[in-house]
Length: 197
Image (cartoon, rainbow, N blue to C red; front, side, top):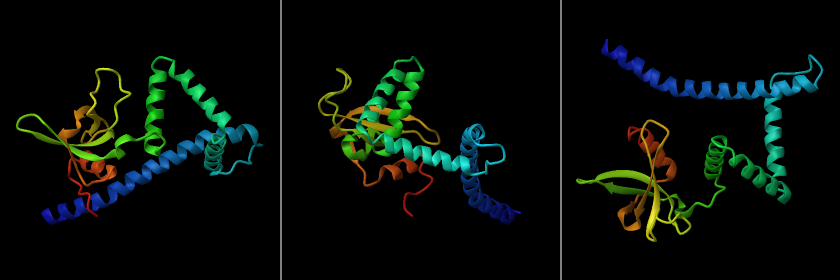
């Protein structure tokens, strides 16, 4: 019975990540397809729509927007639109946070400190926490938030999306030879999954 259980768990662990990945991919594609198929329903005669045209339209639209935003005048227009949206309560906060997050992951924002992975010690006896230096230069930070030798370190939380940003002296961080992606994987899984392939 134990052998049967062990084999079933092994099979489940092999199938589940693949099944969930495929499910999320299908959900995303079908969502985009259904959203953009409405546009085809408006502009094309009935019966002309072929499944898959919504995805093609979405990719084309993303490319065209990216191409247009290469022009200076449209970059200024986008900045103006960002400022207008950010003035609205709640909606502006959500938009600004998502916008900053997208730019961060796309590499579009200045990333001081080169996202160095570090260990910080907290408490007595010390607990070692894995973090990522998000900013090593805090000269433009609000007064009272950070001192001249302070860095911002993001401490991700295990098994959930979230974490804490702490402001800590540079001499209290210990560099770790690990990439940001490896550090996030290590922390988010509670150290269960090794970073070594």
